[in-house]
Image (cartoon, one colour):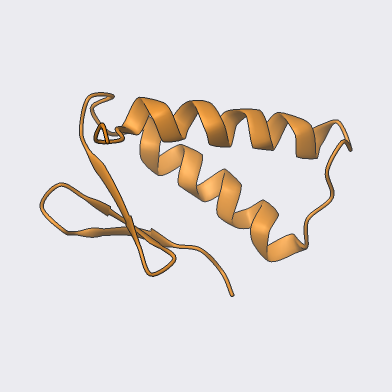
Length: 71
């Protein structure tokens, strides 16, 4: 499987935020806040950097925690 990068997740979560803003989806507030913060963090990263998803948490290629998905 191809390694997933910042651009991949930025595209996905930008679309999710748009759907939330338009009322197409309506997740709980913790997820809405997570989406906003995650997008902001991703925007500050290099689009080609690898993102690792493990145990409901996102890590950069150096295994530094970016964010944890709320329970």
